[in-house]
Structure formats: structure tokens, C-alpha cells
Length: 470
Image 1 (tube, rainbow, N blue to C red):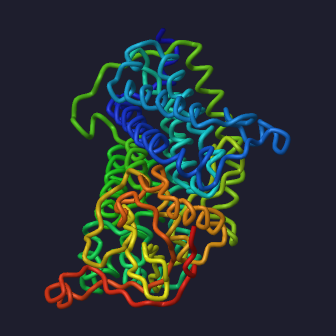
Image 2 (image 1 turned 180 degrees about the vertical axis):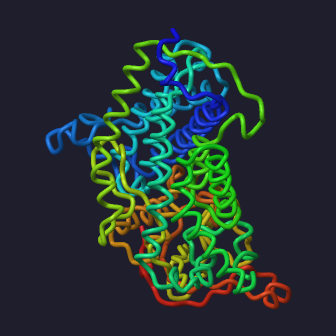
């Protein structure tokens, strides 16, 4: 029915296609990571076994399908259902039906992943988990090919992107002085959680260019998000600025799906008329769909009180969820920059005497280890164990809860744990001893790179765990 022409945004079909299929693609990656990593990290025999919330926390305070009982089989079912539904949206199948079909599919994706996040403990304590949940929730209200693209849903996406970008910009300006004096990138490419294959080259760019990068980042994060709400073509050009800066971040590091999802959100401001110059015909909206979207809009407006107050607060929170549903939260990243990089190097030996042993290093998939190895590109895939190791090297006490069990699994040559690593120096044979040492890491200079063939230079800085045995 065409009674509600005010409800649907003309010339935003491309925005809907990109948002629906792109967000579904990120869900696909996220559920593949659940299948690949969750049982070893948090499963029945994982490093931090899941403890159901029943009897401790109400379901409505922390909703999850695993509230009363958890099993590895059940989480694998959740993972595979998530993969199949996400793949269907990427292929465009639910979008061909009536409006309630993509709503139902995205609703299931959201609830399944919410169930995982709410039992994920420190391994799922990242801001981009909430960002993916909120984006998936909003994507459910974009309609289908049989409806117009709702204006309210696009506005909700823009408000989400503003909180991501403007929140990150404010947390930087209010936080570390290196953001204010434009020297943050003197350190960031070297000390970021998981460098990528181009990070060494970014680090060695001229320092004046680093200052230009930081200044441009401030402009895009503190000013451009408000232009997303401007008339066209200004809003589309603002979205383009966001996409370009996020591509720069993708090239310079591995931040799981944070940058990829931020680029997708920017398409909520992209007009078909500006992008391809070919206006499309208007499609109406059924009454029921209008009502559902209006209820969603009212809910987002009501829940926006706390994140709005957080943005203007001097004690701004970074990556805060105000409810167990992870909806309408606060975002931000890198309020402070680490000046010195330390890494935990885990080693084992087959020798009986640890004092005179030949120690061999375990290789992690993403975090720096062997100085000769160039870091790989992993994003948007999220290596949760490697990220935990970065926080552990920063002195995070929360990470110690899983690290001792991790060492015990290495002593037992546990196959599930070893599959999380890139290299087992003992090819499945249980070592006699393991230990964890601390090293200072810095990028090699261009001269050291040419002469020594290394990307990193490391020096011993202490011991985290003395040799322990079976």
C-alpha cells in the first residue's frame, strides 16, 4: 500500500542492499569464529568454561539461550544456524519475500549471537561485539524488495555511526595527550594490539605525515559524522570520508570487524541518485511494517538517553553497554596509546632439566612472535586468543584466569587448544615443561630489515611464569 509515502526514503535501495548483505557477511564471519574458537576457549573443557546464569542472574538482565544449561553441541548448532542464515542474506534470499522475512532472519541472527556474547566472558568483551549486535538489530527493520527503505531505520543507523565515530573522537581528545599534540602515530602502529602486513611500513612513514593523519582523523571523527544528517549530496560525501578513513585503518592494522562494520554503517547516508545518478521508483510500505518500524524508532530514542549523556560527560565511558541486550550503547577506542610494546612468549621443552633445556617457541596466528615473520592480515576475522595475549602483556589481571589453564593444555598437548595456534614446535607431543617470558618488541629499522631480515627486534624483559611441568 502507498498510504505512507512519508515513511520510505527514495533513492536508498543501494544503501539497503549494502547494509543488509554487508552486516550479514560480518555475522557469517562471527559465527565461523564461534565454530572455530568457542569450544576451545569457553566450552565444556575450555580455558574458561561457561557457567550458566540460572540462579545467579535473571534471564532479562543477561539474555542468552544458555541461561540454564550449556553444551558444546548446542553452541555448534547455534554457530551453524547462524552461518546458514547469514549466508542466505548475503545471497539476497530473504530480501525477496515480504518485509517480515528479513526481519525474522535478522532477529534470529541477533538473538543467536547475543546468546554467545552474553556467555563469552573476557573473550567476548569487545566493543565491536555490541556494535555488531546493534547493527544486526537495526538491519531487521530495513524491509525487503517489496517495501521502501524506512527513513527511521536509516536515521537509527546514522545515529549509531555518530556514536561510534564521534565517541571515538571525543575519547581521544579527552584522553591521551599524544592525540592532542598529534604525535599518537609515532607509537600506535608499533604498539597496536595486532599489526597487519603493512603496519611496519605505516610506522616508518615520515613523522610530519603522521601528524597529518592524526589531524585528519580528528576532523573525520569530530566533525564529519554530523554531516551524515545533512541534505544530499553532502551526506554521501560525508559517508565517503568515513569509508576512506576506515580503509586506511584496515590497511594499517587488524581490528576484527570494527572498521569493516563502520564502513557499512556509513552507507546509510549514501543516496542512489548521487552514487549512480539513476533515481529508482518509489515502493510503498504496508501498515504493519510502518507500525513495527515506528516502535523500533521510539525504543531507540528512549534508550539513547544514557549514551547521549555519556558523550557530553567529562567522564566518558568507552564501549559501554547499558542493557543486557547490547542496544544503543556507547563506543570509542584508543583513549590512550601505549608507548612500549611487550609480548608474552610461550615456550616449551622436551628436556627433563629446565635449567639446561632447549626451549622452543609456540607460534600464535596473529600476535607478533618470531621477529622474522611478517604479520598477516586477519581482519575481519577475530583471533580472540591473540587479543587476550595482548591484554595479558599489558598487565590485565582478568586475562590471568585463562592463562594458567592455557599452559596446562599445552602441557597435555590438547588438540583443541593447539588448533588455536599457528605453530606447535612439538608436533602434538606433550612437552615436559612450559614457561612464559616477557620481551620488549620494537619494529626493526629499514637498515636492520635489510641486514638481518627481521620485522621486529626483541629483548628479554622478564618472566611471567617460571617453568612448570605436567
